[in-house]
Image 1 (cartoon, one colour):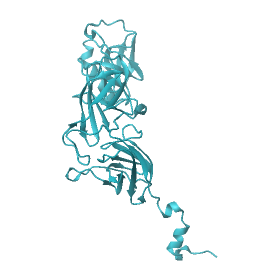
Image 2 (image 1 turned 45 degrees about the vertical axis):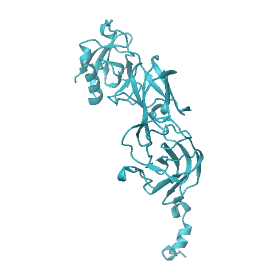
Image 3 (image 1 turned 90 degrees about the vertical axis):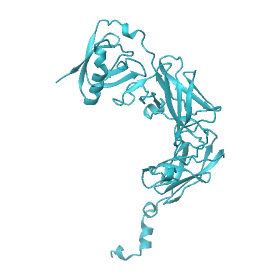
Image 4 (image 1 turned 180 degrees about the horizontal axis):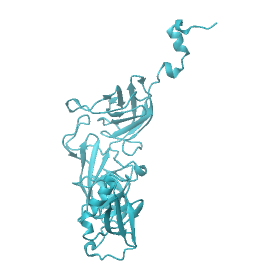
Length: 356
């Protein structure tokens, strides 16, 4: 005899369903790390990343700030650190980004997530007075620090790190770079972590930076946004290549030590004599990388056309140099083909657009 399930009590039918269909599991925290370098250890005013399962039912970013106050709940999700509400910047089922609240407590502190599904397990995380960490590009596993050129805000990165766009620049000794991080500790005057930052505030404790093992002069180090610290440093006299950035605040070393690409300027570029050209290459430009802050700005330090990297230190003589940057960037933007002729070192000396 066939049973008609329509007449079974709802509670009985519920008992026949798989547990996952009947009741959603409560949130589970699997890890709590520094939001910049994803290693254990954070401080007040530090972005942290919480990973786990069932942390949220949807994805959301903070966007509404009432009277300049940061939200302690986002999409129905809340976080407490040492029983104090944290400020929620991003939620998703598998990850939460939050800003640790002001609290002088250090050592092992409990972290708990609460949402519509219930209360998570208590995860013990390590809290410090300072936990400096530099933000790094996700490409190549965070090998290169997020660095910007002053005034132009162009990204300082090796050639082709982001593919065809954006156009990147490289730095040279004597230039001032801007780095970003979190967890650098208190500022003066004190800035309440739960409020939007309206005025930059310098760090209360001294910061030291080395690039390539050489001391780098710090021009500014302070809080410029909620949980976001900015450090302006002058590149010391180091060689070309990827140079390691080491940083510490009041003796506390940054857990990560990413790199920045350095490229020395070719000497006597303006008086260089073009050697014999050995070949020409036709295709679309893959990427080009400028030298930061130097004239002529139209001369890159690296370029690639059709997958072939050229000019480790470019020399582009007039009249080619006047149109070089425009033609290269148009090739990237409009997918135009160019014809570049170069010498035995790969240095480009002539460049023209190839019209169909």
